[in-house]
Image 1 (cartoon, rainbow over the protein chains, first blue to last red):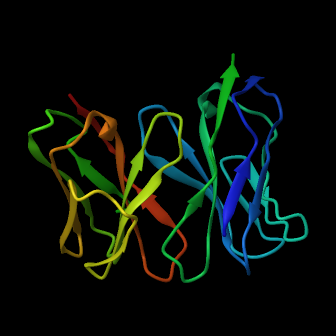
Image 2: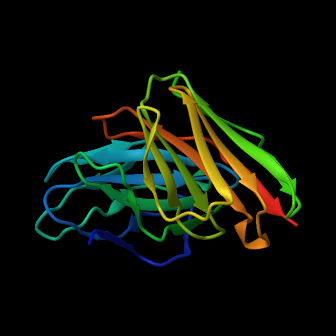
Length: 112
Length: 112
């Protein structure tokens, strides 16, 4: 079946540090891949997405590239801010499907 | 308008109460979802409606009863809940054929 595996958190960084959150997936075919962010006390927001191999999703300084050969979709940001502190979920959905499969989530703390 | 609204924001109910959660969107999305999220966990899919018809029920106990009275509105009726049902309940919507799923801010439910 389909699954998503994320690196365990929490991840603690100082402001302006480089961020990588690893995500790998198992799926048949060519799913769409997503990163969602959840700030404390809020719902999930779509951060970025990629729908086919080698696509790069980007938003608010965050980037992730759909790597079919390594079945990965790692999230990166060159310089994190305190306001980036949140939980980040990697997710996939098969084309034509209703279900989104979420990873366990990675909590990020950014210190000033 | 890319907003999904949920009411109430917080709800405390006893195990013998009947209450309802409400979700609304005016984006013309014809797929609507209910998720349950426990602390430090990813969202768990409960129900999916497509064109106002129930498409997926993830073996949710009958004390949770969904309803989709029209294309903009989704309700979740609650009856005889257990303390372990305390969680954040998230609604989401998506345009059929599109990738992006939009989440509401959630209702924080506490069952006493």
